[in-house]
Amino acid sequence: MNLPRFSGLLIALLLAATACGSSGSGVVTPSLAASFTADQPSPGPDVVSLDEGSKTGNLVTVEIQVTDISGIYGAAFDVAYDPAMATFENWFSGSLLEQGGQTPTYQVNATQSGQLVISVSRQGNVGGANAVGTVTLIRLTFRVTQTGSSPISFPGIPTLLDAQTQPQPIFVSDWFGGTIVGT
Amino acid sequence: MAARICAYLACLIALLVFSSPATLAGNIGLSWNGSPGASGYRLHYGPGPSNYTVTVDVGNVTQTTVSGLTDCVDSYFAVTAYNVAGESGFSQEVASWPRPSLGVGTPASAKQGAQLTLDVSGSNLQPGAALSLDNPNVLVDGNPTVSCTSIGFIVTVEPTAEGVRPAEIGSVELTVTNPNGFVIQSSVFEVLIEPARFDINRTDATTTGRLDGKDTVWLSRLFGVQEGEATYDPNYDFDGNGWVDGEDLAYLASGFGGCWDGANWTVSACPAPL
Image (cartoon, rainbow over all chains, first blue to last red):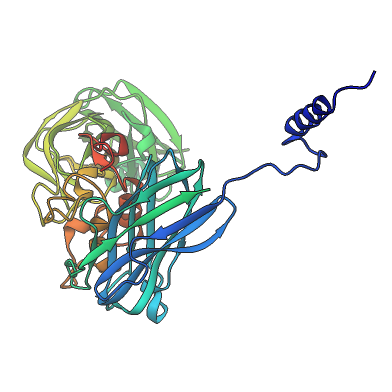
């Protein structure tokens, strides 16, 4: 008995749908693509901002950058993100506080969901570093877990600190965040 | 001939008491000058002057250790020398308590900043005993209370105020010197770190009560500074070893991102994310 044409087409569609995700079926599983959009893609002086670094698949690296600020000995700040949108994966060093061959201390506490507590600091009796133009302080890698978008921001009172014996806050006009996107 | 040898031996014996090793509590060490011509010695001791209830032939040696003595009272000792010609008279008599011993302290530990009464058990501790601790920032306040089996004293573990050199963490050795000259030493107490001290940057209201980058940057700035240098700050020397060093950074790192819960720095004590 010959099946009606549209039934055959329906059967073919159903077979294709059930084949999604199964190995050897030749059908690629749709996957998330991560990206990051900076609130301030062209930061001016005296600014800390986020920018997109590298990305692959559902991973995106966000760079915390400093533009035209001098005498930076250390940085203390939190980064807030939506844990329903992304998970924090890892951090990587930036070049800013490594000027002059210094080996800064990096601390990233990720135990509280949706919030990172971060410290980057030089050590000992050395001067601060100068961000001439835009220089990266630290890199954070996130994994997007769903489609959509949500902000990444600096809550509380983020601070850059100078090289005094008791380091004091340095003037920063703005701390710009951005938006992490999953598509 | 035999009588002259015996008389000669008796004149030369002088009995000395010395403290024996720590494992021989309730014991005492004795030594004496040797007598020429002696082939051996006998030790005599007992509970009263010239009241010797025990005699021990120790052979041809000039020192020995006596065990099983009654604690907290004098025992009396004398020695005779002998050879084939006979035995000398008694040497000069000496009296002594057994050597002292020290046991555990109660409490066994305390945090920096504490003031407490420390009771240390022991034996043969004599009233009037002097004591000292090997940690210069753990202070003994007032006079100790000493009984045969314990010694009690008030202890202050620094720092009790900002800017005071902290006591170094770790075991503390007590030295007790009895009026009879016996000295005993033992670790009786441990200084523990006080985590509340880690919050060194309290000038910023937003960081008080939480360990964060503002504390790390402040500590890092003084990294490598030693006690005696102008910039040394005892508030940053968490373990009290006289340096602002990697161990202090590690202590701060262990609680980094946490808030004070009354005993430690924990993230669970922090308010919900901002």
